[in-house]
Image (cartoon, rainbow, N blue to C red):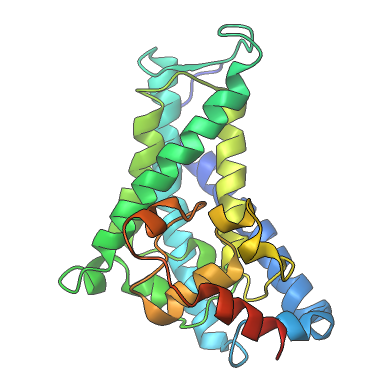
Length: 253
């Protein structure tokens, strides 16, 4: 691997991360709000059209978040080159079963981390310093998926920076986690419900967070803190007991 300066890697990662955001969030917004919006009108979660000023604020915060995450990515790469991380390239090192297992393990760990820091972000004494920027838009759009205040972006980035030092991970797993996180957060901030009416009651659907689940959080603040799974919300009493009813109401509008 060619040696470059830390800031060269930061600049490259900043471009990649920002481009990924613009491609996935921007593509979702283009599809659902500009092209196919009327086709999904009955599945719309927003109460009113998004404001241009709100989208602009979300994009500005997302550029800042991309800069922070690029810093984390550069730290990870330098750690790998120095031999101090547990990242590796050879997929046969722990067996071909391991990349999939480690992928699932990291998602579970990330969900636990996200749930508890998210609850902290919503503490009345901390909210305006850590998390208010993400909620300024009210009802979210895909652009909101990456919109974090600086302290929140740093805390979010710390998970992946830390996990590569404690869990052996092939690079392909790390990339898969990053892509899953991006797509999942855009889906949850989409502003449209894509899952079928049976989703909240299905044995599998009961454990996954979807657009309606997260939209309720953006309106109520005191429920639904998870990232991927509903487990911790249900265990710790932050799952909205009216979730299924609200889901049904949405699809019957």
